[in-house]
Image (cartoon, rainbow, N blue to C red; front, side):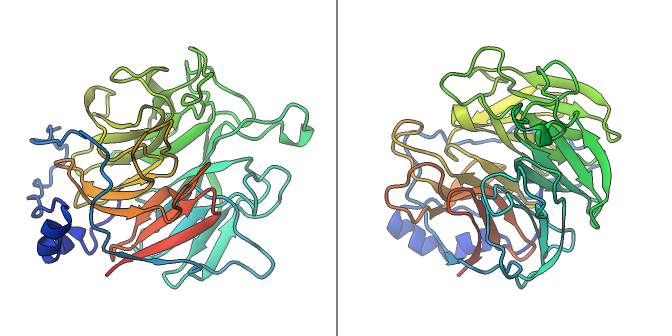
Length: 378
């Protein structure tokens, strides 16, 4: 869940599929002109953001699905995963996986896995450290950040010093930094974290955290943590913004984070069925509903936005199908849609985490089906 690299842009596919798009009613457009590179790019508002007047389920799907692409060691099976990102080589894939189940509590299995481009496991680490690995980020130095989005069970003494934390690892698995205090739940007022969903670093090294996994619950109380937290590059707390609610700048589970090429922070505000966009000082810029009820979000360097909806339903987001929507982080236009193959999905299905490699291949991390799926453009 991060800003990626320029690869084979799907904008090329927009041009190639334009005639087909007319036939099926999909809206295609040309590639936007990239803004000039600047040391401190000025924040700009998109000129045209299409409103979601109804469900966006009718876009073309030019991708082929590849199941069972990734190989685990003999005897190990996939657990739930919502965390996937791309190595700085542009081809290798990092995943945080829940130890063959939907939790790593009581397990010593390595939760952080690296695969090469052919799907072979090349390294792993993090065994015995996590309760609920949830979000992952590979920074510009190829360090690996993983969030632990659950707190300890008071009836399980072995969990006392786990959860409510984020770990920064070297590529070899050495812990370089810890955010929050493992095992201690924050109240949303300071550096302590409470079920952190996702983490991402800005170009200056600042660290941003989507904090609070419980805001989308119907019984969430007003003091439920729902915020974005900013730390400096050394992990010192700087500020936070948000709070439980549905007004601009409030959240009901800030589930995923991504930066666009301007440095704007896109927040997948899952419980509010929208993306909120901020500058890096927490100033609200705009919100977009057209990518649906996102769990995961990923933006490449050429400003293609990939949004993973794993939970839309007749109650949470009537009329919208689950799946991955692909579009522009500049204009907000949705161009492609990879639908959930389940005709009547329940619980959590389809991709919850999403990432894109330098060749334009999409990777979907799935909680309910417990798998990592690769999508290749035809």
